[in-house]
Amino acid sequence: MRARNLFIGGLFMLSACGPSLSGLVRDKHYREAICAAQDGGEQDRRDVGHALDADAAFYVHMHVVSTEELRPVLEAATEQVSSRTKLVRVSVQSNVLPIDAIRMDPSMRAESGKLAGVFADWQTLAWATQEKLPGKRTEKTYITGENVLKGGAAVLTLGFSLLFTDFEPGYVEVDPPLEAFEAMAPLASRLHRTTSRGGCLDITQSSSGAGKRCEWYFLLDNVSRDPVSLELRARYVSARAGERAGELEEKSCVVERRFQMSLGPPASIEAIVRERFGNEMRPVREVMRGD
Image (cartoon, rainbow, N blue to C red; front, side):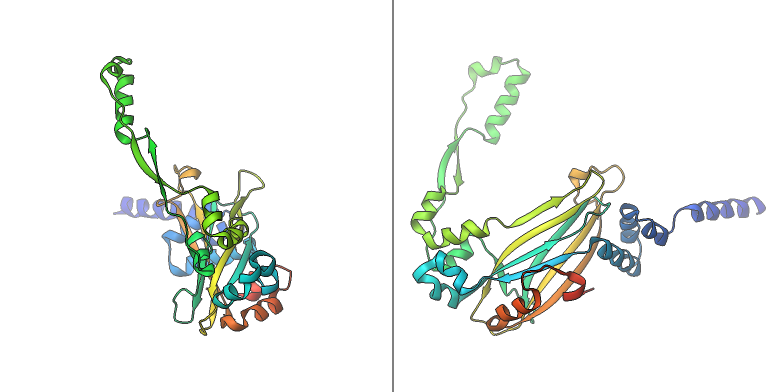
């Protein structure tokens, strides 16, 4: 019995030697803290999330593209397009943190939780301009699964099987060239030149950290009277031991945070956004409500 008690006591002492979660956060060992929080409780994830938010120091900016800004692009169609939708640009930037990745996902939602805005892409821009888009085209390709297998067999037989192998083409659907879009949907094409620049870039000062700079374009339903909110989901990602940074998927440790900002109905959103942001990015902690 005495030996058993000593063994259990030894295990307890060993476990106590490991760093505490608060110690990991204090020393900014965020990779380990994220995994410990994921394996822990809700309060652990909240505590680590608050620390990550503070060091990430997210900044956000919003801009509603005005009718005057659209007029040089859309010309005579400006009023018609503006009556249907508002084009909104959202920009977010973080500091670099000692973690493996930051994922940012924005959305614009009504009070009911339904989507109130959609990402600007060819389909949604064509809806805004009431234009039709060219259909996909069929092209011939020899890069098919069957031909890959035949090529593998040729390698194994030192090329001998090529004497008896016919490589048959396959067919794939591809997007039409840009010229086809410009011919059928000139207004959507002009808007697409601007909105296609959106997306996220990784900010890295060294190989030991990750940050994010993002810009997205939304089309907001201008007919709706429901109040709209901008929601941001930030996911702090850390690879588990043995996982490569380029494979940050299912096995990774994640602490997720959400931020929300009410913007009012579409009819008044332009004035609200201009007053709240002007031309300056604002700290997320000042203009958005977190978890």
